[in-house]
Image 1 (spheres, rainbow, N blue to C red):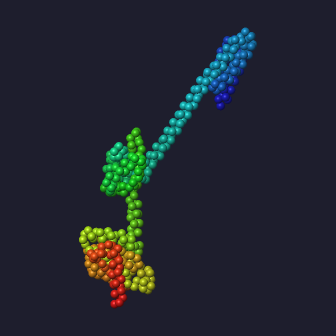
Image 2 (cartoon, rainbow, N blue to C red):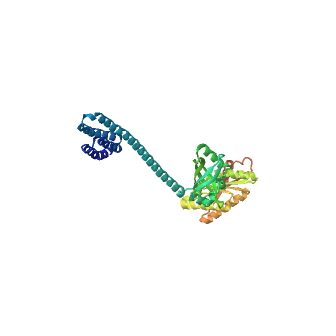
Image 3 (tube, one colour):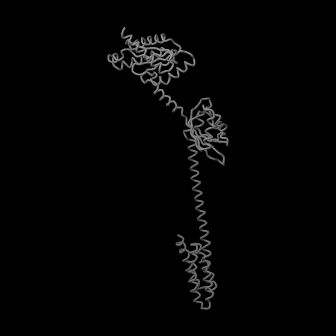
Length: 401
């Protein structure tokens, strides 16, 4: 590109210079060659200056030849002058051109960096302001104590019920309701040590509602000061789903009563509670008499209806704090506090009559009861085993009668 421009500019000048040597005095010829050399150097740098200088030397040489041999010394001085001028001006132009190019590249790099920064800031603002999860920034002192909120997004305000202005006047500790004392300080210490931390906690909303959240925090710096960027997530729905799944694992799908696993979990708790209070615990273990024949006669759908009716009647016969469980098939268990074995047995019999009326089929249950106050019967497994044995004895007695 530069050589093309040089030829475009220098060629007319060289031609004009060649014409001039025929028309002007020798002294003027020496001067007129300088613009040709400078123009070549300006357009194409050192190479252009030297090239233009050589053309000037050739043209001026022709002029000196025409003027006579006595001017050889002057010609040599003029030729050297042209070359030196071409070199010096060309070097200066090359240096200037290089600096200008580097400056242009630096300006372009700065412009590109600014565009990238603006795009990054735009994306950050978009994620910060329009993100579905609560995002907030707060300071952190050197004792791992969180300081005031610096920025909060709309999702944070929506979760906690505060306006942006109200939150910016608070610290994370003001809304902290973690069940574990000192959790916030411990997590901030981990953050200072490792740079990131993830944990579950509880936040107190403006109306006093406790909101369980999962928090992911990272440590950064703003103007040399530590700043915490946190993204929190409302986990109430997740906790409800976990509780629902736990309920499914502890409850019988057909009747809604506790299943065997649920009884294994709840019975030790009830036994411990009864020991602390000094109240007796009575355990009943029973199964429905001739349930297989009932299934064979009326069908499994009717049999399921009997199981549901028995479960409903047993549940209605005892308090909410008493345990009622279906252990599988037609086997049921009741664990009740502060009641005699005879009284519990009578409630079970009454419940069977109520279940029979509901389904229109006579329903009877063989059952055995034990009381936790008997020697050696304090352990839940022993209570269930002894109640099962009593039930078997009752069933055998009923068959003999």
